[in-house]
Length: 299
Image (cartoon, rainbow, N blue to C red; front, top):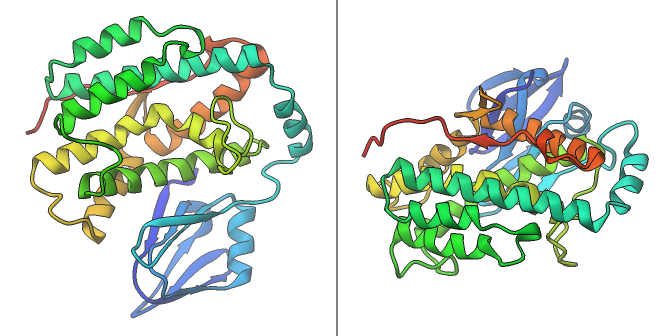
């Protein structure tokens, strides 16, 4: 099973040799493609061969490109993720609203539950309010408990004056982490034969990742947890390479899924697959939700 995340942060040339990714920089390094789950091109001074890109697509390696500020700006996606993509897309187009509303309700519950776990981890009193929001989530989140919970949640973590619209280091860190989670989610959507444009709840004509935006929601709190920890420890005075690598490491941390420990990268894979099965079977009990492994606050 693929498991490694490779980050290329310096000027180098990448090419393919005998199914190895060859990194030619100050030194030459090789990594077998079968080990790679994600390849992040962090520097704009990196060149890649077409042969390498084609093979990465065939082996379903997620490739994420960053801009001149080293923030994720695009990703490489295949036209076809599996042998029956055409059939899956036809199926996706015909998803019934009732089923989509049922799935979205479960996604919201899972997201709020994981947000509540973050507040519990740091013994923040607002966890009680989120618990009440969780109990009051209605079908298709008709009363928008997701938005109410988000406001209380972020203010509990980062203060009453904090807004997700602000231009600050906290939001830069959150957005970076969310970008990585979205890219991994998009990879799994395509690998399962579906397209990212047609969502369950998100329906923005300018968003080509509507479905990814839906399915990533329960995993946002894992990024929030790491960013909050860094902020409280005074490790967000800047947001450069080291800080990004610490956030990136979240995808290889362990979470609890179906009472078993999984690294987050694999948990997202299992979750996306289970969502599609739940839609086909109209049964939300199939969904493999993830939660944090209980641990004491290290602050």
